[in-house]
Length: 216
Figure 1 (cartoon, rainbow, N blue to C red):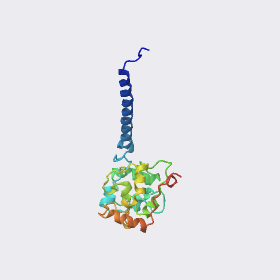
Figure 2 (figure 1 turned 135 degrees about the horizontal axis):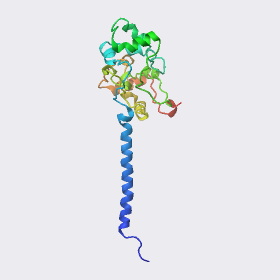
Figure 3 (figure 1 turned 90 degrees about the vertical axis):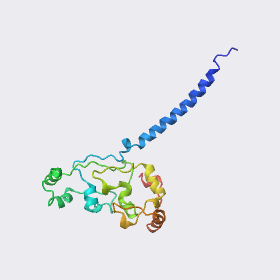
Figure 4 (figure 1 turned 45 degrees about the horizontal axis):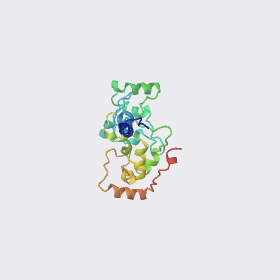
């Protein structure tokens, strides 16, 4: 029986198969890179706000404690957003005529909340509790980044599950003494792993990685 296909067809077939696998691998790599990029995660992208609130000024320069504004962070799943009355406790005395603070004064006089743009958020199908992380020695800047240096707040971490699991699998790399949790300029010591292991025992930290920990 005469040969139907030329012998080169075998080579073409092999090249096509290997080429398809190679292209799929490249496509997967590119898709993962895009998914990790700031275009998707919004990491390091400062988001415009109705009032250009500066953490660098209030926290870094004036030394205002996180809990002054985020009052429920130690007792609730939500850190809480400050009511306008909190802002006006100071700004009824200083910067009275500043055009920048016009939305704050309008919010206070009209008893309408300021429509802040959310910067850090997990999906609706994820349960996150601020208070338990604070109690276990997870610092604000571990998740929120160097807020004491932020003129306009940006997202410092992707908040992807793989990022959360990195801490849940090895909390000793991130824990700090409870007295330093709200220190916006805390730097991990050289013996962080030794300190972290001691804090894991002291604070009875569990390495919770089962699905129902966060997906309830």
